[in-house]
View 1 (spheres, rainbow, N blue to C red):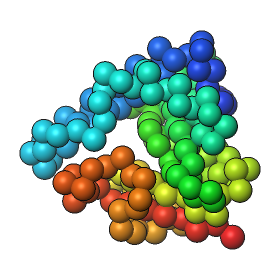
View 2: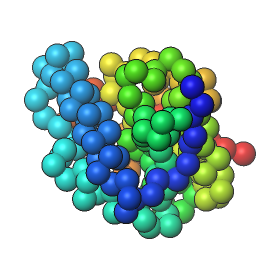
View 3: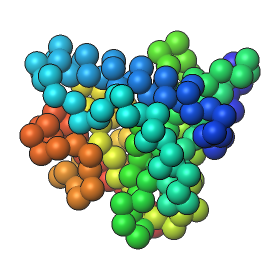
Length: 169
């Protein structure tokens, strides 16, 4: 199944991207409840669509994965935390496309974009139960680190997350 990774067309695709992100956050929150008994959320699902406008800023980038039928099957974002430091956000692949290395393709596109943005450091966070995501990040050279300034994960939830960093040459 040929997949195209490209920049999101926010005006035209905001509803479809918001649906992907809502599915992602809703599923993750359910797993957080089931795994750790946590009812709190670091993300307000109701504001996801509105938050997409942030990605029209040149210090940020939003990419989508599109299948041959034209459906969006993945999404991934990048935002600048400070000069030379970017953070990967909202990386998600629909369940029916997992195992096809789509997450790898999205991550590689984000890393290429980080280079274009002249970022020397790439950071991210992932929930502790997301083992396959953690394997992917480690395969690209990411190493665990302490929570970093600018993370959206509030201090009282950080114990349920793993924070990663990649230092680029």
